[in-house]
Length: 221
Image (tube, rainbow, N blue to C red):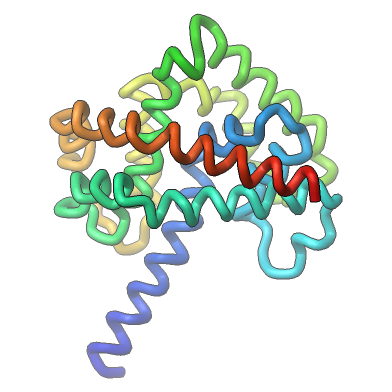
């Protein structure tokens, strides 16, 4: 196998693993951008656990939630502000910079008092777990197994705390085949906190507007 093919295969595997890591780590925005619709929420949360034509086995509105999740991911990946934010992590994480950036976006959403004033995040997290648990018969087996950890450890609320972000980063190192554990990543987050916060401030209103437009089109269709 020549070097070019090997590099291509590694990049392809990293890309696939990035999607897997995103589905394990990056939930708050997808839950929030389901706009209070239970079946859209289910699809939005399970999307990365649903492969190929299996999405057509779900009720129509859950299929629409799967589509919405993927539209949000695509919008996020190509957004110029996201590309700028990734540069903070790229020197120490390489191809995995996008995974860390997504987690950081969820941290700033969790601390955003315009979106979650007072106890709103606690209430939102509790309601989200309640809805997800009411659909366990439809959820993919891997997601169901993970849901017990998500709810018992209150992942959605813990995005608010830097310790929760540190734990999320540690989880990436546990799962990422081509990424060695590196304490500099969390240090990078702390040192560039204001820069990353500014990226979130620019990005989130735009992804929210985009997601709502997509959601409205899907619901009307």
